[in-house]
Length: 405
Length: 198
Image (cartoon, each protein chain N blue to C red):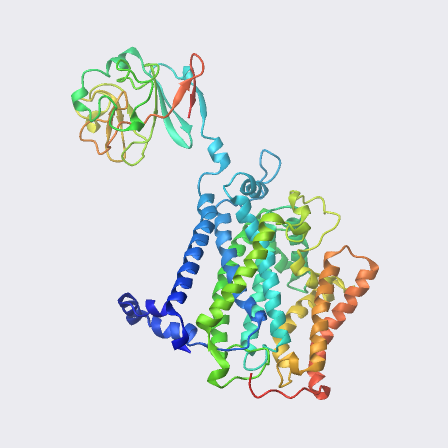
């Protein structure tokens, strides 16, 4: 199919002026990929798909959304009413908004699976350190975009979530108060905050698109890792990305869309996990809802924050829990990449995944003394995992690596 | 390997997958394009009620219908008299050229008035050239308007953008860039002077 297109005169004309032939060959039809990638390698392309879906649905939502906290005659606000108008009056507005809201959760699910795969199979190790670091930057920008976007409906969770998070920055010494005012554009979250968050919510995906380009470029320089975690040199151990992995990725897209569409059409709020119930109450700056928690994909870090009795320490720990991801390639010095050949690391990393889920559960639930202790233990292991990696090669007996895949 | 490939079967599968993918893409485009059409509350605002009795004799008011300007003129006997006698100056004196300038209630007698009740003219105020609102220059001749209107000006409207001229029944005058008379919109009387537009 692509071959016959590439033989046409029109393609030759384009190729002469863009070098399209060389690009397609080096990036797709002759881009060599290890032949043994399993389905965990589908999540990268799925993340790209969800990013495109989020940008597309976001553009259409922005045609109707109005970022203003001004009161309307109905007693609500312009922003809150414009979201309700999208849900009730705009043709297919409900569908596009649910696609966007569910898409946010889907994006994080897919990206967390992608990161987990990278951890388990050691994809962050040399020569892919920078590829991993670019990925962590993408994660941070995603979290920022999600946080900015969550303010926009101007419901109770929007308002108090933004209040809490902007207060975090206020905990920093010296610059804290200043930083907080820069974020809020006032002394409390209000109309100026809503306006700038809308602007930034539109900006961040553009940054994401650019950095994702860098992520893919960096990948295509160092090539994909594989479940065995060994370097592949022989031609017979590799297959071309197109058509073999484009077809496999397309199959993954089909499976993904099956789940995505089911949630969008039949359970878009996911019992309050994807769209929180309290956010259907208009923002009220004089009353905090009785239970306040971020959306599920931010709860692990929220638990780390509240595991510390000291405000500043909590904020620093939360920052460190994300910042330490940048250092991971340099903390883990083992020459062996894949967990398949690292018995102790394998147990540690699986426990790490469980820990993150526990942290997420604790952050989603109302704080109790028991959950607080569980959260503190989980937080301790979260950091211990990274520190232990430093010493692990000294006592871990790795299994012998195969010569080829 | 390659000699074992059944190329025609492969092409059939490519074609079938491409076709289904294309159908799915088109279906997915429906909600996105659909969302850009007027929303339900915009459509709900598509009727306007107005009491033409509030317009003084000889006065013109501009009201809104679907966000578009609408002229309502209370035409005096003198103004109604200005309608006759210049049919040769008009592109479409009987308002028959396109559907938008005509209406079901038009009879041979009231066709020239372009109004259900001759004294109240209700027309869309957008020049049929490029949509500006023409200026109301009701009196005959150049006495009040100088040379912005022709010497044999029958009274009517003059568009400031590109100089289109309309008579007092909003019929376009020859040599104007505008192709048609000002459009009519559906309206009906629900009382002596109360009108529902749309």
